[in-house]
Image (tube, rainbow, N blue to C red; front, top):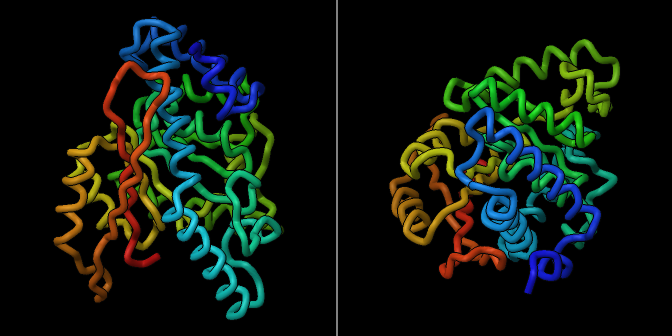
Length: 294
């Protein structure tokens, strides 16, 4: 069965065209800067891009993940009763008791840490156009490539930051967001779809509502260390893992930690999935880390 036939049952044809256009850019730029080890377009698409597609499908269909979305709604309701208005940028008009990710009922903020050539952030931005994605990448050359993709493919739900997560990114961005919001008379409407306006394009993204995602970014102990130090800012952390790597996260989570005079444990859940276009016979795992401050 060929690639198109397999994807047709999972991804609309228009989205497939976007994925192929993005993949072509990666392969073209890979001749100048190091973006991927894939030797050709078909290999990159089948092994890398489609892996992100099937991972997102598994995540979206996970009961565990959908239950977490219900907690998002509960938090929104509490904010409304306490403050009389929504204090975060989850779009209340898209919140529904019976959430269905396929019907875009809720808007989420994703932080792709160590995005590289844009995996999974760019791929997921095509699959979930109502969500907002920030791609965090430390290498300037790759940032230039990511900006090229966003501009040329007219992706209006992505922002790019040239920074390292471990250098107090959340704290720095929080201050930046507060400054930008203070300058705007309508902070809640500050999300700007003008792709040429880099400073204002993503002001509405707030770290307190974040779902982090990491794909090939760092080893489990380092990611878990980052997660502990920043647990007040993120809600959920999705890590592309193997079965062995997932088990490392499970063991790490048993240690627990203390932050702000409150003890807590990072809950760990695994979602197995299979890339139907890959030559690999073994499936992969999405490791979900849930903040104790969720």
